[in-house]
Length: 362
Image (cartoon, rainbow, N blue to C red; front, side, top):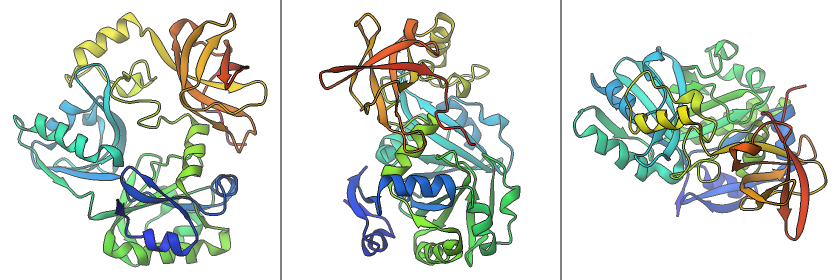
């Protein structure tokens, strides 16, 4: 099992460590609800250094990215980022990812930790006929996500870059916490604002220490992966391995908005046909109307008691104090306000389909 450059720091802080995607990661420190609330109301910092980073460079970089990704990367300009996915040949998704454009011949792809090798091999296979330059920098970079409404104010003292000017899905490269050439991006996974800091492993201990120091007056706390999951679920953001995987299409997963048929990409023809015909099932958001906690794998039923799908992600929402979840159902039951049921152990618990996000800023 791999450690991040900060694993020892988390252990010293008393974090509960668990294996995650081959890494020794902090799942929680004080407790999920406290950490969740910290990010919603103040500022918290996550070590997400297990994520993968691939640099795609050279005159053929954009051609390769356009071939393997579903979104239209030609729309990117310098300093912009884009959410996308890597379709496979069978109608499913190899991974979801974020694409950063530095200039017309330099891009960064940020991929999920559990898929680093799979994604690299997939992209490399499609690069055989294209010839872009590929560098897997996953083992060289650390990644901190500094999230929450106080993040800008708390971190501004650490950089000359105007953090308030970095719009959502934009980024800057600058000096941060005394370290040069740091990528500062605003592509948060929590719905509460903030930044991601990409820094070389040898510099991350210094950055972590200065981040905690700068945030002390703002109530900053280290946050584990458990709260990261409840935060992203309240926003309805997909988690690879739960809500999307090799068997789920971007169309049925509600990711049609990142699937652009203005270009040719892997399996685009079949995905276009699926969009035109309409998928047989759809990923929905639902909330329980009685007490209960939905969990991944629980069966979903219609009001007549017929099984119509299953839960892919579920939790007790710390912000809303109710059970919420995502799951796939037969398309006929996917409209908002549709009454459904979740089988929790032996009980049928009533729920209804809702529009995302679950959590809306007050």
